[in-house]
Length: 446
Image (cartoon, rainbow, N blue to C red; front, side, top):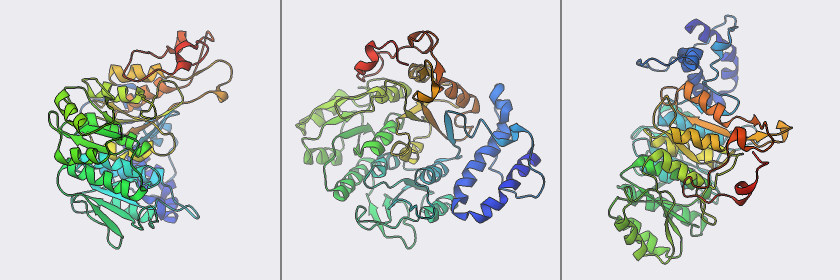
């Protein structure tokens, strides 16, 4: 099998040599292909045995004939008709791949004005930095290994080649907390110690750069990262800052910033077990704006679904019908949320959903995706489609899970022409979101 993988790489040898600007992204993709060859189509059709996974193999360029077996191409682990995997083995690789996918460069196509650098071990800053990926700043998150930039991150920086702009105060990079600043970059350092304090500094930076107050504030838990993860995608979509609180008390830095913007509506992510009623009362004392819970589930998977469904005026995804993008990550890897945030700010904008294990999808996630399964009566070319970005390699979210996701979101014919019999009707009781009127009564829509 390894020899066939080497044959597959040989056809790419010339491309890699003549397109160095895309080499970093190629390594990430090839990493996914190699892993797929290892877990392979066997992993697609059989249960996957527990086994240790070694380091990613080196790319070997050979001159032999390319493989003629479909299994060696790495599909469906890299992509299916309705899913695309960012197959990094860790959050550092995920961030590099996402940045290159969302800010592709080429002749006449410049990269982003700036990038945001965060230490990979600092999940809270990575999540809060999602707001800097939103327009007009558009700075994707890259992750550092402590005080060093990995080869992948350094390579991504070289490809992205940010040049700064008036919007970024002529800065090419924002270094969050203790993240290292790239050599020869015009860099602005943001934040000190502490999750709440750094998140406040990120919010203040966005306010300074845009010259405007945010439309909303999102309050997330600094103690339970799996409940905070979905905030990164919304922040990248909207620019709304993320602030942190503990379960029973609100940090002084958070309270102070809320007091400076007393008319900005506030939304909490998490039930009273995650952000208590006492913490909510502390927030209400320093603001004149409404304070609402956007999610109320006691499980992080269900909480993410609640947030995807939620809508209150201009706040919330309101994803209660087909025709959307989604991002699915593992709740065990919180930094992946920040690394993947730019996917929700470009392309098929969509919420971050969570799975809690590498193999079987949670029942709630399956039900939600099936609820939004698109359909058509006569002409599939006129239908709407769902697309899912899967974050992590096959040890994080398995090939079997990816194939299940593809089937759940795939376009399907509606047998009766009424939509409900095959696809199911959206539930008006799931989550905290408001069900669109067009979905409540229509029986001839998918």
